[in-house]
Amino acid sequence: MLGKEDNKDIFYVYLHRKKSDDKIFYIGKGKGNRYRSKSGRNLHWKNTVKKYGYYSNIIQDSLSEIDSLELEEFLINFIGLENLCNKNYFNGGKSGFKHTLESKEKMSKAKKGHIPWNKGIKCNDSSLRMQGENNPMYGKKVTHAKEVLDKLRKANGTLVCDLYTGIFYDSITEMSNTLCIGRKTNELKKRCFI
Figure 1: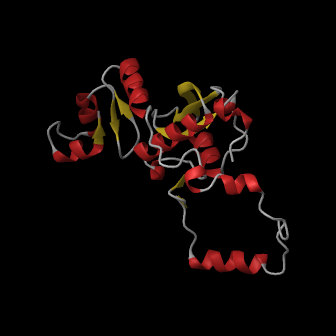
Figure 2: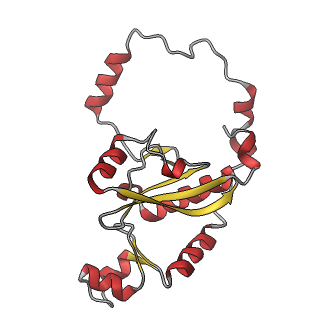
Figure 3: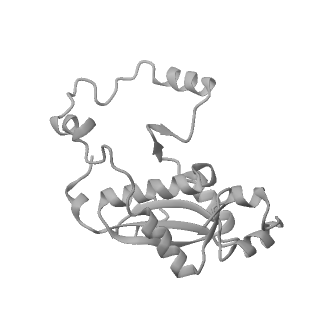
């Protein structure tokens, strides 16, 4: 549930890139110094940073929390969750990770006999008010994503993104030469977003 700050334009969307090859490996939203913080990161993120190093870029700032969540979701979908270290992202109610039957059984056995922390606590009215059409995100589409991509293109000249790796190139020619794929091949057309 969103807090009192959801209408203030104090949030931003950021990305982390590997120092070794500039590949994007994390997309996030935050406020304050979250984009620089190493705390509260998952093991995959920590291992990537340990191996390759990283640097941060704020993609768009001065956003409301809702707008920052929409933009974060758009960029994660654009680059592909499988190309990122993000683990707490939900797409249509599904996380990007699925437990095996064996791990589900182990978790079930470990929980048997434990009393849940929220047993007997009733759902509060505010969470019920946020369901369905009452939810501020209900039926909304990302409206400012094109603006952000245009901003990235403007800052970097003609920006081309490799959809498989999330790496941005200055031109199709640069992407073609780097990947050793012909400029006019279907393989390159499938992989790039201008």
